[in-house]
Image (cartoon, rainbow, N blue to C red; front, side, top):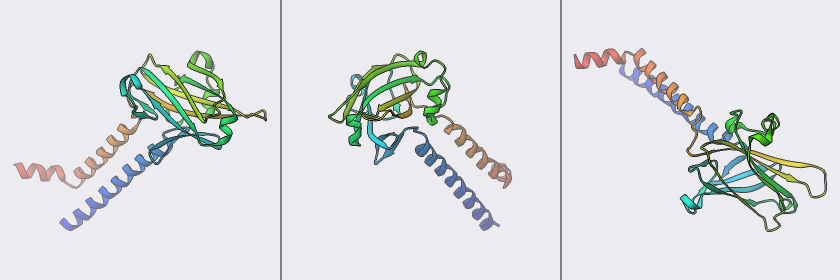
Length: 208
């Protein structure tokens, strides 16, 4: 009986570990909108083109690099290092928008188009500029903690077409989203299994 109980418990724990692993994987794979992690480096996807994307807070965090979880409400420096030669020929602008519709980490260009008054939701806008050296740099001093959406627009140098990258980021502390809820559900499932196997009765009899 004890062997059967141990086997069931191990099986349950194994499924729970798998569930938590899938949750973590989903969080990292889908939780960054236009930003992905490659070898611990943030990469922004501007359609088929890519650029390293980094945020600095020199007044409070010196040279520490951030991606989507920006800790302090202060001046933040946004840097893009182009990984595609065509980007060095394109006029590129950068916009920071409050996440007024709470789309979060799954923000896309359709969510930007769905904003009724984009200008009213915009907290910062950098006019288009061409950076032939391959580095784009701008800064903005945040005044409020919250969730924001970054929008990069690149204009093709010869054709009438634009390329967009849309990505979510949090300022003033990490947004854990629904992860705590998933963890709570997992704990409750495990507790329910323990109770169903007579865990409470055994505990009571042990200390009776």
